[in-house]
Image 1 (spheres, helix red, strand yellow):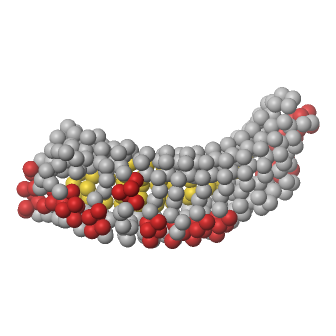
Image 2 (cartoon, rainbow, N blue to C red; image 1 turned 90 degrees about the vertical axis):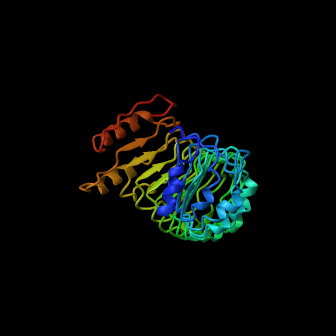
Image 3 (cartoon, rainbow, N blue to C red; image 1 turned 45 degrees about the horizontal axis):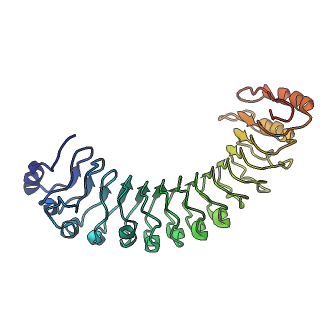
Length: 356
């Protein structure tokens, strides 16, 4: 910590044996220095957490384009929490780049990012909290080796590549906290290896119907959006987390392996009898903050019966708080009968018209 320039020892070592990894994070660097182009064997470069670092700022004594063109073996690059304004166009030479981290970069030009060519071997792409980034280049759909894409907390991000379905090897897609993002491309269904989809705190009004084609999808987290209905869900799903939306109903069929069903704080007025009884793996059910006047407790009985003797246990939580439930005396008796059967006893409390 505290280094203001790259030590000369880096370059003397490079003359004896090529330097392949350079870790410079959490220092006081402003530039890499005039000899950075000598590091032609560089594979990993981490300069994150150098707040004043700008590799082609006024203090730079070498041409960024010429320097970056030498790093043809670069595989990992982390520029997070610096003051960089652009990536060099000569980054097209980084054809072996596997991981790219661009987080907390208030001055990074979205235009310069959009002009970059796709990195054909990129597997991890992380762009967080870059306020000038409004979209991801359409050409980046061709980065077909991507395994994880994380584009979170970008206040002006409003466009994703329409062809992102070509990311068929991608297993994790994180898009949380993008308040300008209103839609997901229909091509989403082409991401056939996707296991986790997180789109919390955006402004989505719907999830594409192609979601049903994601036969490896295990987790869908889409809390705090403006979603009014859900499309058919893939049978592989085991976690559905959609509180704080505008849902009025659920799909007529839920994945049988669902373990978490969180639909709290929506506008759901009814739950069909039999919808929950088929969920043999269910452990957490949340319908708090909806418009339910009745609830199919017989489904809960069926879930508990189905889980008897299972190694992972059965139903643990049923949350119906803040619903306009009626016939509370009868319901209280039914709940008390069920409470002793839950993995963790659940106590009924509530008042007339307020839930419970």
